Each structure stands twice: as structure tokens, then as C-alpha cells.
Length: 162
Image (cartoon, rainbow, N blue to C red; front, top):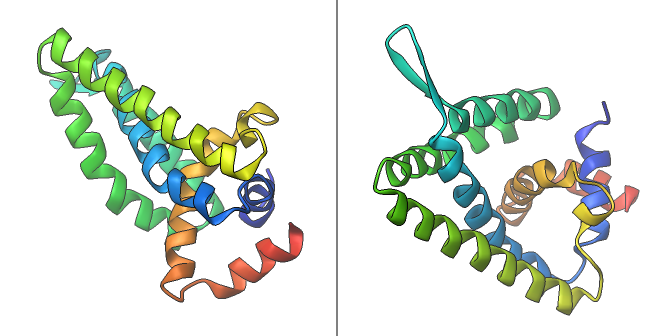
């Protein structure tokens, strides 16, 4: 498996324009939240506890993130556990409510991101590498860390690779 800086450099090459990056801070979390809603509808009972596909998926992504970078993965857990809880709650509402919230966040998130790519003048990274769907959230967490003055050596390594 590639190291985090390599994954981030591939993603960063498609996101050089600041306006594009800004749109992704809204679009990526919106889409991530949205896809967890229908995933919450599929659940199995494990020892008296319902485990949804959303819970299993987020857990698997967290394992990937911890393999890539422990501090950023920890931040992702702190961010995404409430997002998962909200998605599970929305998914427990009526199918109409869950479907409406899913559609609004999914379509809205993609519209925002595609507007960003108009500014960028380049298609989304996932068109060339579908794995970038999983890289986008941790990339944005790293970007937030960089803006706060953390992980500067990671930032410099990514920029060198770009």
C-alpha cells in the first residue's frame, strides 16, 4: 500500500485552486454523511446489538486511516463518529425522511464539489482513481491541520511530491 503522502499528492494535484479546496470542505463531508444514511438501513444483529453496514464501513475506513497516519486517523474518528451517529439517526426515521436527507446532501455535496472543479479546470481525482473517494476525507483533515500549523513536514512532503 502507498504511504499517505503519495495518496495525498495524487489528490492534491487535482486540487490546487483554493476555491476548489474550499468547496470540498463542504462537499466531501456532505457526501460522506449522505452515503452513510442508506448504509444504515442494512443491519444485522450481532449478540443483541444491531450493526449496520454504515458502522462496518466506517470501521473499515478507520482501520485504513490508522494504517496511513495515527494522528490524522484519530482526528477522523473524532469528526466522523458524530457524523455516523447522525446518519444512523436519520436512517432510523421514515424512509421518506431518510431518502430526502440522503438526496439533498448527496446531490448538494456533488454540486458544490463540481463547482470547485470548474474553478480548478480539472476533473475530479476519483475519475482517474476511485480510491480517492477514501483519500478525500483524510486529505481534508490534513489540510485543516496544515492551516492550524500542524503536520508541516507532511505538508512539505506532499507538496514536493506534487
